[in-house]
Image 1 (tube, rainbow, N blue to C red):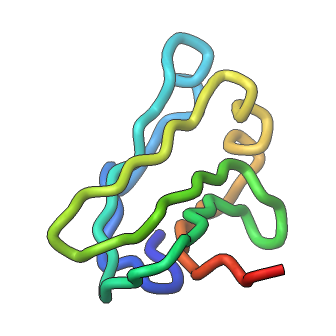
Image 2: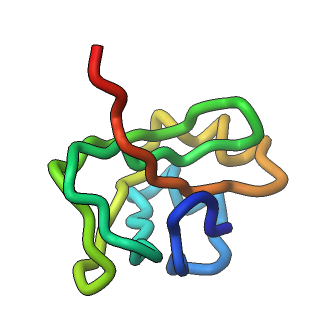
Length: 91
């Protein structure tokens, strides 16, 4: 499900059992450009399932996040996965 600053995510539905055989690639577009380092997060409620850093994001460029076999339990137990993008705060 699209979260903060995500216009859409494909595939719309996934079968968690697929992760026992191969990785699942989530592809998405952002709603607005962010010209600074961001973190792409895949979550189930407060539980972080996968994350990826990007130097910037733009609506015209597809982003992708890979879900792997190690993510199987978290994905299997999830009612809904949410993908979001947010700037990384400077330390």
